[in-house]
Length: 124
Length: 124
Image 1 (cartoon, chains in turn brown, green):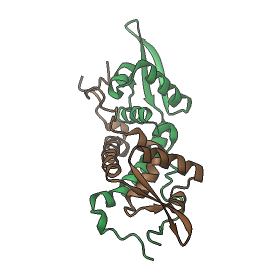
Image 2 (cartoon, rainbow over the protein chains, first blue to last red):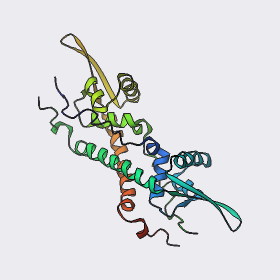
Image 3 (cartoon, each protein chain N blue to C red):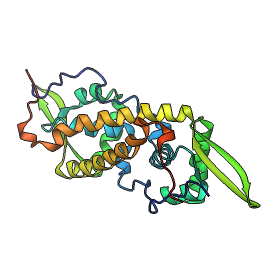
Image 4 (cartoon, rainbow over the protein chains, first blue to last red):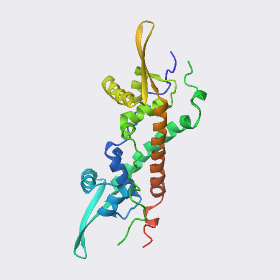
């Protein structure tokens, strides 16, 4: 039987792909927040991640409930202002998630760069 | 006002994160299939991705309907055998997806490796 994998069980399970972070919009939100450690205003975040008010609010709520971001409401010249910032816990979990992304890129890179026919699949 | 982003709209929207591929289990399935271009048997795929029969079937169906994998049923010594293989279209779409993952890793890498306080956020 060809292609009997020599890899251990769950080699491609990627358990570290934290579902709270992996969701597409939230991944964009956290990536923008990790690159802006002083935080971003709601309107800027909305623009950077191309989200509607409703979607942004919904995803921020998930991230806040999970302790990954903190949301500070204040007033600036009598106008309400919402600032979002990644927490230390959020940074830690994002880093762990990022390690898994890097693993996927490494796993795939060898094969996608080289012609498929050159790969040795099975020792058997 | 601090942290006014100089990035264009949607800088962190990552539109290229194909939802069919991005789903955690399917991302593992496609990554294992792209590293095994001759295909994998259902049982091996199940083991490599640590999925139940039901989950594996369900996700393979989504990938097959979208033309990303092909599933070939045959008999080997009178026993039914299911072989799954990534298609040319699947390979193309996975490569596009991989480019976006690499972009995210690059976007995040600069900030997560360096102390946050060192980053200059705003030219204004």
